[in-house]
Amino acid sequence: MLANWKKRVFPLNRRQAVFAMLLCLVLAVNAVPALRASALYLITDGEATTAVELAEPVTADKLIVVGAADGSAELRFESGHKVTVTHGTDAVQYATTRTNETADALLKRMGISVGPMEMVKVDVSEPEIFIEIAASFTYYETLTEPAEHATVYTESYKVPKGETQVWQRGMDGTREVVYEVVYADGELVSRQAVAEQNNTSVTEYAYVGTLVKEAQAGDTIASVVKNSDGSGYLLMQSGDALHFTGSMEVKCTAYTTGYDGVGTITATGTTVARSCVAVDKNVIPLGTTMFITSGSYTYGMAHAEDTGVRGAKIDLFMDTYDECIQFGRRNSVAYFLD
Image 1 (tube, rainbow, N blue to C red):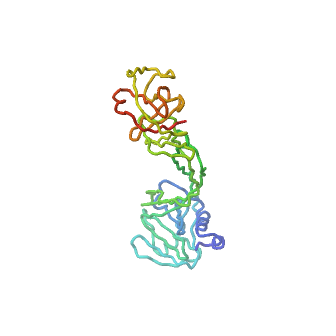
Image 2: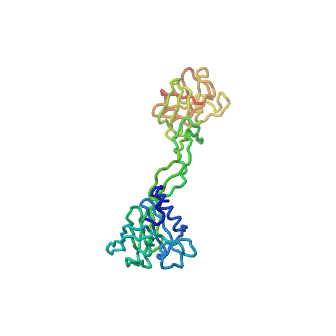
Image 3: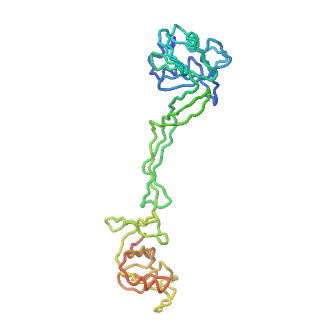
């Protein structure tokens, strides 16, 4: 294939071999944003492709020279290899390499000249050498790049809102990125990632909390998660969650100020307002925070601040007398919150 490299290259796999030859025969690889047509050559081993630039000035017996000021590097083939050359739309031509023949000499011997806006692709993936000359080429290269780990977040009603708890640590790794590279008229037209494979990073998993101390105004219960001890979680329509230590079925009535001698100051000294409720302090201790729902009607957050009822009953403060009449008396559930 390439003269004087058979013994050194033979133990390597094909991908390693072609780049070992490129490093030694071509001396260096320049990554430049725009490559002149007369200077661009693509060498491939069937798995990876390398673009190299022809140094100037160029002597007649040199085909590929990169980064060598004196233009002394050259690409030579071993003897006896069949060569297939395709030049644009011209018919395929065949030849056999001679001992220490340079690629430039081979093309000249076949009567082929590379035009000013053409490029040369040399494929050494098989014992037979394939050379293609064209104005545009598309090839694919695979690079190993750092890969940051991804993080998957899952909502948890057991974690306080605003907090994140990692339950499986992630780890950065590497990935193989396949790039589609397009050259036309000797210049790099585009280079974009088209595939990714062999990502070694480890995904991180974390909980995002939804647990709150108080429900939003007007929020309602979407579902209830109960534990065997009677505690549980209220999963709200808003996405928030409330933890309750227990629950009780109660009879609820409604009251407001200005009727039946009801004033504006509660038994605990607070001013009446919505969410203020009256309880039997022997059944529900004063200061208890609750969430109260009555089937299709949700009273919402409630604080035991007043007295005046007996047993498993709760009197709900309403803003108007009409609201009290509409509510009437309802079977309800009071969830006792933390």
